[in-house]
Picture 1 (cartoon, rainbow, N blue to C red):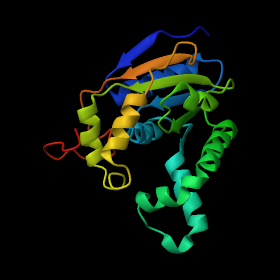
Picture 2: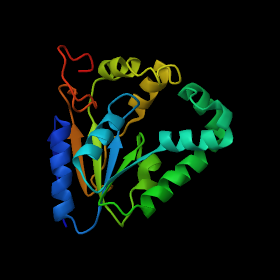
Picture 3: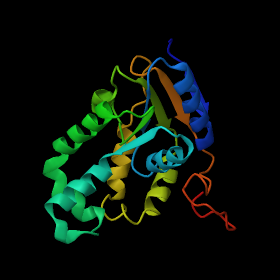
Length: 207
């Protein structure tokens, strides 16, 4: 199957439809590799796709961190990410390895690798030949990403703005020879459905 040119979209729904098309057309199962800093919408997209695609698995390094933290500190159930990140900093290589193992062992038609994947070096281990690899590049301005990050009470205390800015500046556009397809997401807004809210009540504060 030949490599696709860049595909530009504005809505999560378009990515869901594209993914379903890739599942039908590709000769092997699909891996979706989002690229973007904290707060850009990677996890929101993954959760949205989990409701739209039947054979789907989201591999989240944050979820791996939480699980590992509870194994090590069961008495601290319910603590915030600030404590989790601090405690597990020496465990980052193990967390990365667990995420790679989960990707390679998944039997789902679509796997979503929920991590930043900012540079070719940081994402290369997650681009495996057994899957049709699709980059999803989050094309948002920095001020919008910082605004969204401030609306994440579970993360804003653990990750200061200067870290988000640094990650924003590090993000490298996916190269043609890295992926089988490249999708650029330039959302006008994230709708209430996309953010996980079922009902639209007046002004959308998360847009």
